[in-house]
Amino acid sequence: MIPIGTTPAETKEVAGEANAESTESKPPTPGQIDTENTDDIANDEFADHFDSTAPDFDPTKAPKVLITTSQRATKASFRFCEEIVSVFPGAEFIRRKRGHGFEMGRIAGWAANRGYSAMIVVNEDTKKPNAMTVIHLPEGPTAYFRLSSIQTTAQISGHARPSPHYPELVLNGFVTRLGITVGRLFQTLFPVMPEFEGRQVVTLHNQRDFLFFRRHRYAFRSSEKAALQEIGPRFTLKLRSLKKGLPVAEDLSKPPPALEFASDEEDATNRKPKNSASDEQEVTTANSKGERAPNVSNDFEWAWKKQREERFSSSCRCSCSFFVVYNYHRLQIQISLYIIIKVINLDPIANYGALNPTTTMLYRPICSLILLGFALVTSVNALHFYLDSNEKRCFIEELPTDTIVEGTRHYRALEWDEKENKYVNHDSLGIQVDEVHTGHNVTRTRGPSEGRFTFTSHESGDHSICLSTNYTAGWFSSTHIRMYLDINVGAAKPNVEHDRDHVTEMADKIRELNHKLAEIRREQQYQREREADFRDLSEATNTRAVWYIAAQITVLLVTCAWQLRHLKHFFEDHKL
Image (cartoon, rainbow, N blue to C red; front, side, top):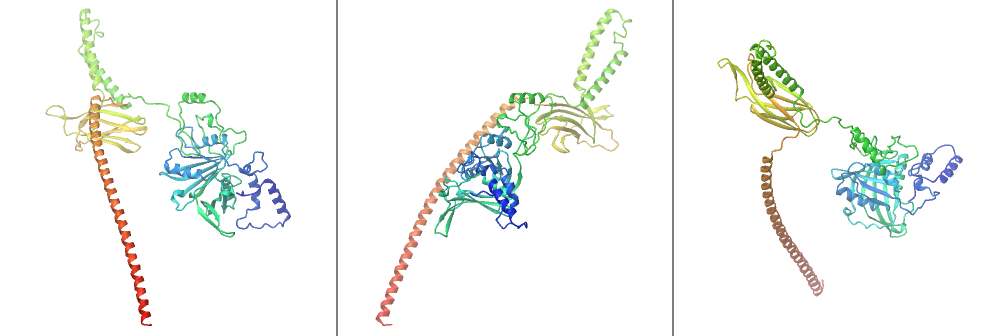
């Protein structure tokens, strides 16, 4: 592998020769590097890989490459990673775990501390690899490629088997400044000195910003001709972004110290410094503030949202409007009761001077019982409100996520009847309950005048519970509906008996499903046997047909030979 660019010593020689020539700049020929880029090449992030003057420089040593996948990878990504592990001599595949602490930036720092010189991350979408991120360690850059047109080694007909020899690298079309950077990035994945005994060559062909990857083995037929046999895999890359530095995470509350990468130099991406406290101190700080680790929006950088500081109680009762109505009616009834007691002179305190002690002692328990009875009645039936026939009343509840709201409804149509001089109940009354969130109806429940409703909030926020009736009246009607409502917010009470019946029904259904599955298995086994018999019969028929065709061809050849011999003797006898 011949690196793109030159070493620092060669750079000085090239610069001296350029000054000795004419001052007129000539455009580079196709496939030639512009002389302006030689200084950039000599001082870029990949110069250490090609620096032959370094004390630890070993051209026969394969660079360590860490290959991993996204957090939710499938077998397709694992198979592709196994393919590219065989391409790079020093590659090692490690499956990526899920959860906090395994973000790309932390894995890159972990790999840099353990001597890896590059990191490749294969991303996937809809269970297919669709992108590949190549990170040069320890200081970057980071290149993001779109991945397409993947063909594994098994999908290539007549492919050759790879050998453990270091392959040669051929780069075509990497002549621009960006192309030189990308080409040198791929060069750092291979050893500087290939092993020519293996006769393996890896080709990256750049055409219209598409990078076509191929791997072949060549064999010399003569001094001028050579034959190629593809090894695989083959795929196509398209560069989407090239960033300096490593992918980092910002504002993390719990960075594991084992995965941090410390550097004394200034960070190339001007990112924020990481916290150097221990895990125990960070966990204590995060718990004291009520914060959680952030959710990852992407693998490069993310900002985390603070959690809600206030939690709702699982046994909160109704809304503020119900509380106001309840207190208002209770106060009104207590005032009426006080006036009645004053009118009938049952207040021993007001008439203390007019009553004797015996009467006072007799009236006190009576008054206490009356007050207690009215208090119990008002505490039970005071929570109600009024609805007109064509009116909808809404109440707002602020609910957290996955909260069960259960309402016990007792509705009664109270319409004034002049004959009976009281409100009467109508059986034709129906109640409609709408749970509205973010402007659209989430749930809608319709039922009779008495019953209950239950729903679960799937999103946190303000939820409007709207109640209306199906009772319509004329324009000049004064019909009013008095509605009693009780709402419980939180987990519903478990119904043990219903759960037992439900479990019994589920067990019966599972037994029925198991029986059907057994029948399906027997039917599948029977179909397999039928298929095997049919396959044997087809193979026997094909064999007989082949023998029949061979016999026909033999007969035709014998007949043809006999006719030719007969014609030859006929012409010889008649001297024609």
